[in-house]
Length: 341
Image (cartoon, rainbow, N blue to C red):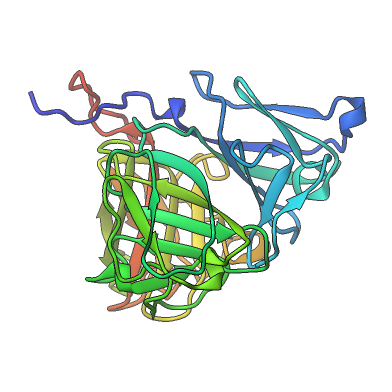
């Protein structure tokens, strides 16, 4: 029998949580957010975005400590520490204080939560900058990273992105998560060296390797039936392209690479039924939007179907990269197929 996946329950390693704020401060216990999955999952990385306001999103991780966060959604600001943001990673969720970015009394939020695990192809690490080209950084994936986000958190710098399908030679090119800019050719971020199963390489750019500064790196390796980091070409048609993933997605992010267009993020909790129309952006702190400048999707049992023809996710002849994580594998390790939504 063919092996379809080694991860029958993706909720052990990735979950989406939509919640409402209550404004409770940590001194009064804060608000404990419990994940909805059938299995408990203590997250190691949480990306929280407010849905009803233009507050910048926040990335928290267990390596730097819960109360430290990187402002996102267009920000290049250095790491901040605040005791009223996310304050703890719990056995099945996390706790937030009264900060507007995570728990305003009238706010609505979505949190995208990952568990660090080589099994699921996710590693978090920090490294000290040395301003030296061709510096190898060891990682713990025991597999080649396919998507990397590297951020200098001691200074105001870009959120540097490597994606293995960005171009035919992705180690020579760069995307940044904090702007909508197209792919640029640069040799000072990845030193024109492709990552391996034991190291990735950084250049001498102060953006991610400045002497005296520390950077955080989030690394993912593709796992069949759980994650997919690929590319596609748009057709500009309302009967849009189909992207095969090998699973029913819970989270999908796409970015046009040949021109300036936003990083669009869709998920299965803000839109639990097809069509998926709500999107947030990793490069812009806008609230939830449904817009013809971007694309509507169906989340299918084994991929996504685009239902709108426009530049955001389906421009005619345009090139896109995507990142996707599963709600359920198309076929599990016992040969049982997933249902469509």
